[in-house]
Image (cartoon, rainbow, N blue to C red):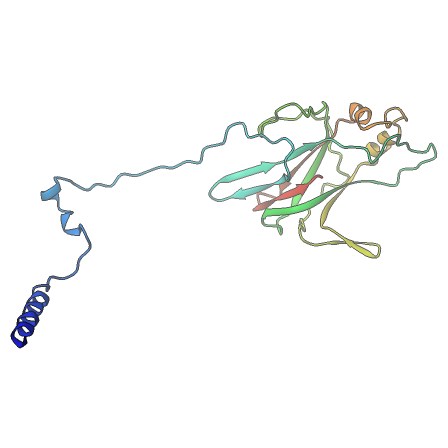
Length: 228
């Protein structure tokens, strides 16, 4: 029994002593030109981003407006067109109504870029109606009436996460764009039949197109708006 144990220990020691070769990466020793008949060379590669084709932009959850200048991907501009529903049926303005101001409020749902970069917004009235059954792609150019409806053309810094104080309450962060009084007075001239239903209203007021420009080629930003 003692001899058997000695032989076993001797075999084990012999096995350990035979494993003295250094550990190496598997297959590394095969990377030899003489064995594989291969050679190594360097080739320059040029890569480009490819514009997506015909992206559907109808009825989006979030609509984007703004401009951003990216050092890698270049310049990106975004805007959107939208119709408006009446808050109820048989809406009307009293004859004695006097216009104080007209403001377009758009609720933020996020942003991309640098919100410290100034953005100048532009609002145009649509010259043709939108069709809910029509496909609208990202590269469709809307028909708009001439003339920017924004009351001011100053550059502003968006505040997508800052609530706005109104009287004694704070409401969700939103962008407020004052529009021209001439535009507001035109809405006041609509008669009862034109304000009787949303369909009638949309036949005389097709909606608005909202776009924006960054200040002097600054980084800029893209604002996400929830229109619902």
